[in-house]
Amino acid sequence: MGSTSEWARATFGEAADELARLIPACLLRAHARARSGHEGVHTQTLEAYGHGLYAAQYEELVAGLAHLADASAVRLQGRSVVIVSGHVIYPIRYAKKDVPVTAARLRRATGFRAELIRRHGPEPRQQVLDLGLDELEEPEAHPDLALLPEDNRLVLVAYACSMHEGVMRAEWGSAELRREDRYLIWHRHEPLPLPAPAA
Image (cartoon, rainbow, N blue to C red; front, side, top):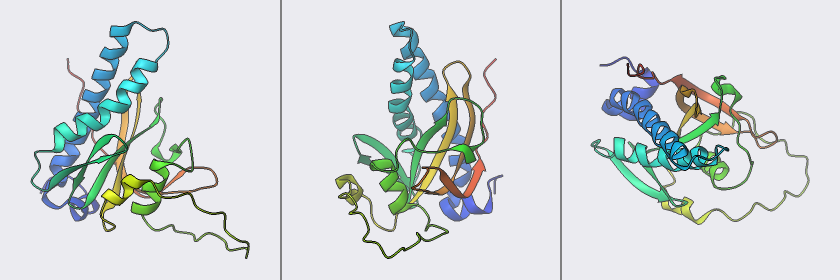
């Protein structure tokens, strides 16, 4: 048995130690690709880096984890994501500076990411207060969510990363989304050890 927690072993079984090692390496490779893309186009803004990192994070996780015995990939909203042991591994860059993962929040309380967290994340700790008012009609579910079995659970890989500092912090765990302020309310989160930078 490796150094992963009881939660990680209960979630991913024998793959837990390897995932804890591979996921940070995938994030570092995604950052390196995005930085290289930015340097290649010589723009004054960080658009190339941001868009490149967004695409590369999914691609690197699929490339790095696909060989695991219980891994499969599914295409969601134009990106392939990895499922291991019935858990969707979903990356979110939550900050461009080194701040705790408890500061993580989404840009929007609606849309694909928000729906994914609500449908496949943990049950909310506090139920929504019923004031007896008619609920606003929920928008129709994103069709790609039908590609995931209902019993699949979500494991968020939340990381802080910038072009100049690289990946500063990475954690994994389960969180609900608080609709009113878009903060992720973590039920469980644990650091993923980042490899030492190459000399």
